[in-house]
Image (tube, rainbow, N blue to C red; front, side):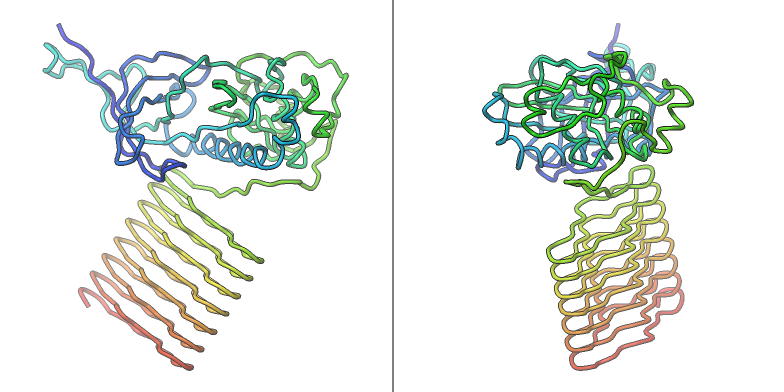
Length: 466
């Protein structure tokens, strides 16, 4: 006599898009639904946010599809991009078709990604562990966690040409994303629940001109499959959407999701080239920006360009639990570039360019539990650059350029638990440069250039607990 216990995850890698909190899930040992690539398990969400104790669905990839975050990242990116398009549609396009439809909102659920902590075990007499249940879930693999949606689950279109024409808003939204993006992206494989006046959707696919969204992204070939089977309706006409493939009578695609390994080599080659026989890319009317997380539990979040010619570029999380968050360019020609978390729990957070031609460049956390945080360019032509955490538990924090042409550059923590903190250039051409902590538990703290053309340079802690 006995029973299987529940599976449990670690805290989620990413935060909830609505409340900014991280959660973990406990879920049952048997799936309640099966898709082409995933199994769905009922469970409960836990954490210190408002979703604590709520029902959730944990989705586990079948072993032949994905087990690790680097393989799940394209799906997460697709969900975020789809949400961006849905928000733009809600802001500026629903009002143009409100006389024709009852619905007034489209929402895409953004999954939480978490690594498995405990895999269910079979307990003899309900409390003596006997055997690990690895039928569906394996130790250390990654899973996605979504809110449980009440209602009748349905599929409104696929990524291969199927569409349920009665849901006119869904097929029009798919068509609109292709049109508004200048033929570069198409949000499809729309599925979920219609709840009152709202569509709640999950697991979208995106066809892109460069096939960036994983093995459900069929590129321009997928776009042709969808457009060739799309029956434009009154909503399409009201929004002025053109369809270059109307009347071609293409063979209807499957209701199930189509994967890149299921198309012909010729079509796959054409998709990778971005070569359509029926349309060409154009200038986008609306764009959803992309930021990339690298491999294995990397997170890039809260990257913002402010107002007035701001630039944020080359923000990267590398491999193995790296983190980049809260990177901001402020107002009036500010610049943040080359912010990188390297390998093995590197951390970069709170990097800010302030006001009036400020610059933050080349902020790097190197290898092995490095952290760089609170790097700020202040106001009016300030420069912060070349801030680096080296290898082996290094820390660089609170690096600030103040006001009026101040400069902080070449701040480095070397090897083995080194620390650099509180680097400040004050006001009016203050300068701090070449601040280094060397090797083995070195510390450099509170280096300040005050006011009016002050300079502090070549500050070094050597080796072994300096």
